[in-house]
Every structure is written in C-alpha cells, then in structure tokens.
Length: 153
Image 1 (tube, rainbow, N blue to C red):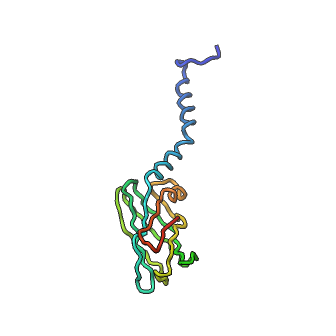
Image 2: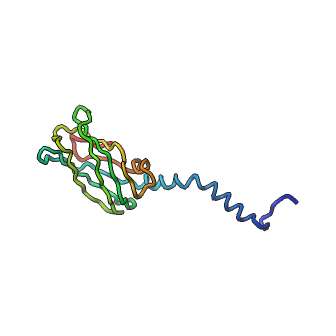
Image 3: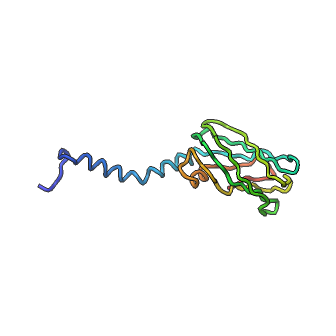
C-alpha cells in the first residue's frame, strides 16, 4: 500500500539508524560539557628565587575530574610591564582522577621580582579528560595565590 507500519520488516532498524544519526552531532558537545563542567584547576601557588631563576609552584587540583595521562602546557612569564620575558613548555601530567598535586618549574634567567603575570598560552599536548587540545584548554581553570603575580589564560 505504500505506507510502512511498525511491524513491517526493517521498520525498527531504519528508525534506530535515523535516531542515532540525529544524536551523533550532540555526542561531542556532551564530552566537551563533561570536561568543562569538571574543570582541572591549576593555581600558581608560590614563586621563589632559585639562584638566577624564578621557581614557580603550581597546585593542580583534579578532585572533580577524570585522569589526564599527559598535559603539556605552553607558559609565558610576562614582566611587570606586561612584556613577554620567558617562554616555558612544561609537562604537568600525569594527573590522576580525584587527586591534587604540586609541580615546580623554573623560569631560567628570570628573577621573580620581574614577573608580573604568568600566561597559559596554549595546551601543546593533551591526553585524557578532553578529546582535543582546544577542549583541554577550555577545561582548565587558572588562579593565583600570589598577590603580585596573576595566572591567566
């Protein structure tokens, strides 16, 4: 008769395929929302002189999120006038789920009194809680406990 009914062969499988095709575009959005709703909080916790270097202490708080196998960050130290002074690529992973860590990194040849801001410029490598570098960057929340030095992205 030209019309299909629920008990015709192939009706159910065609409907299932159509429903899955409609849901497919939203699957990536759900993953991105999961990563950003459970942010990885990275806090500049302390800076101190280490010879001629500025040693930075980063507190990585992953109490709410999933594991990160690798997370390599592109950091810039900006001086007190806002001029880029040093660039540093650092690996902060692995970061286990429901764990807080402290990682130390030195900006070589830069005194801490010259640092006015640390910029999270980009995510270089990301393997873990988010499916892409861009989504990893979005999932990171920055903060600073150091009054004289902000940490931003």
